[in-house]
Image (tube, rainbow over all chains, first blue to last red; front, side, top):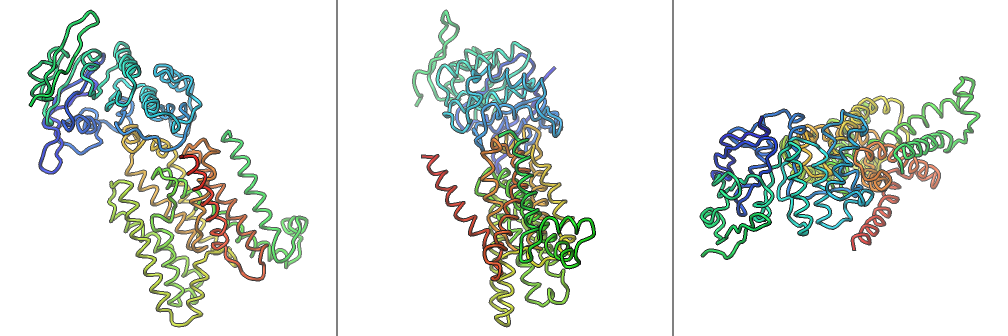
Length: 252
Length: 329
């Protein structure tokens, strides 16, 4: 069973393809890191896959009716918007919206999902605070909790760890890995290659809109790929705590 | 405050103000007289005043206020901006232009409902123009820009009509109409506006779920299954029907759509869906109260509702800005 299947997905801006004939699929239990330098097309790829952008080629999600899509994939945009001063609990509960029949209040299952999402992100103590009055990193965690509360088989997150402190970054990726152990799947764009190497089961490397490599972290983060796509000299070091990715220098 | 208590309090406020609007005015009519009228035993004059003068006035004040409050809350929720108001998309400006043309050409003098009908026609033309300008799938920014352009155009044409008006009486009639009022309206006005206003409310009240989701931004809302193009179309049509019809019968009444959602937002936990009906009730209460003030403060000088609303609204708005600034620093 696949949760997301892309076939030759292409997005053009003017004549230039920003995402160029990308194909891959994601099944349950996978924690997929989408990596690539700025402007490689990570955000565009995910938005097109969700049907939020006009595109050519096929995306299984984009072809679903809006309702089914919302039940299959939760989307955490890069831009962290909280328009109104609502409480943390109310904001996280918005994630239940696709499941609620029109005009009904939160049911027992919805409350349980909100509760689980809050506790996964360590936010239970924050529930009654106004989301707009939290720090940037705390708001980011609240928004991740919102996406978790949607309880979809697939979670798609655009730079979920940006702006989080180191402990919160690791905690977030641990939550993602926990989700995959429960049979769900995660597709997250990441800039921290070390985090990507340690916590993702699979990496997809994008460069200039093209899929450069797709596979286990050790196969994707080769010195050659890193040099070609990121213009970095880097090394994977095997330690007792698993592989560590270390960038050493910028290549000329 | 829990939504239920808020709903009960606001409903009570509207009922009290509506009752006051029936009993207070130039001719003193006590509750007992009113009850006698209801049971069909009142004096003829009292019955006439109550059913032909005060009832349409109170009904219109409540309907106009509710429309403006509701549309304001919907517009602020959609644009995620507390400074948005229903006038922003040019509906009220265009409705006013239609009314002004009806007054200027003498159509209004010839046929009593020509004025509101022209105003309605122009309000809907404005919405079609906005859709043509902003496109059916455009962002909220293009919608605001198109609205501002259309408001400016309607304002320019209104000024032109005033400029070309043949005599000072025509000009002053237009000026007075534009100040907004629910005085001297008949049940015919109510009957004309009510169906459209109710349709508008029905459309706007369906938006709650989408507006809640929009708290997280357009991308997240769309990914949660909210059809944004349809939401925008419903918002435009609902606002045009409710606010267009309200402006057509009462003239331009400002600030209600801006101030009421702003005041009630903290009491609703800032949930856009709760704010919709709260602002509808709050708007009705505010316009009923302002219309009472019009009658009681200077009963002999024909004070206009829109003027009083602006006199209440602008200082309140200043206070809100001051408060927001303090919270932000």
